[in-house]
Length: 270
Image (cartoon, rainbow, N blue to C red; front, side, top):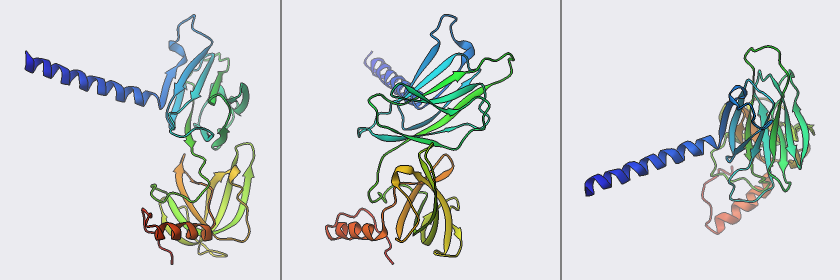
């Protein structure tokens, strides 16, 4: 009986672990259908997601779907939310809900835009509101999006992170998009330390390499004098940066950490 009881406890522990893993996965990504709802269900279906990245797909949309993004973050808000609608989304309009107000992100039938980013700095967690459009046909319809929550780091980057590219260079040109709260930055890099995906290619002008990256509008990127250290990661298949520090400031911080023997990495300074 003791052996059997021990085996039973182990089995129950394994089942609880599998259940916890399944629940955790469900908190990141949601897929559902508007056709399986109860006839007397509320007009607005509620979904709560607790991860920093994931995706939502709503097939055969009916009435409305409200997706609340409330991650389990160690640090308090504010943070930045980026949303990218799926290509081919149809059957519903997509809105960003902040402080009880709806802001149109994608209208029904419109071509999906690039990633839209906004700050989550209100008293309530942000939400994505999907409003189904009236449909007379029963053809397949689906609307969805990817989401990522980004920390508001604006100081020297943490080089322990797994990054898409690290480069040193100059800002050649910038175009801002106030609606999506993003900036597209053309970089002339004098040195590419690490990259994946071929973001920087051989060029000329002020750098031996050229590339385009995305960053947040609040970083205030602008062309002009000054050398920067660009550290980025891949979001939605595009190269994204944090707020790039001036290379001289990075050298100062790096050197001070070396003198205190607190550096967790070695960075080539030549």
